[in-house]
Length: 193
Image 1: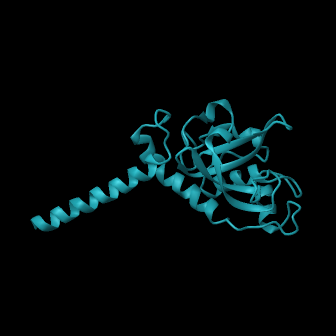
Image 2 (image 1 turned 30 degrees about the vertical axis):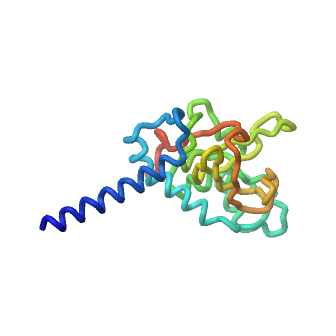
Image 3 (image 1 turned 45 degrees about the vertical axis):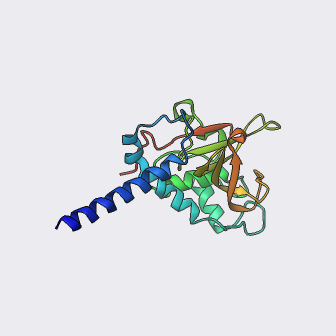
């Protein structure tokens, strides 16, 4: 009995340690806006968002003109039709699939209202890339994980070079300094009934 209790204790420590270590890697020292309680509460939804977005990796446009059945589905979720850019629609669709009412927009700047801005880079948070020629955020992605000064994101309507007008869903590695804003839609986010 004592041996089984000891073994159960070791399993619990291993599970808890792996859970917190996975979160630690995405938190920049001194920048977390979240308590451990909030991380535990939102962790399953963060993982769900990432899993949904990962499921779309490799998706490509039909002819390279913001088209195809899946792209049309993303755009329809925000009330747009092809051939509109679809990076923000992809993020909105991902949140919808995870059961969240918001965000719901195909326009990148809409995903960064002041009330949602954070400094932390947690999985499931949304990154905004600023384009000087547009004078605004013109591309978005979903944080998969952090890696030191780098963020690994899942992005729609991009390509291997990280364009805002790409041909599919890709995993991108972006330096934190290239990220203009980060939004957290899970903190106080409402799930659909």
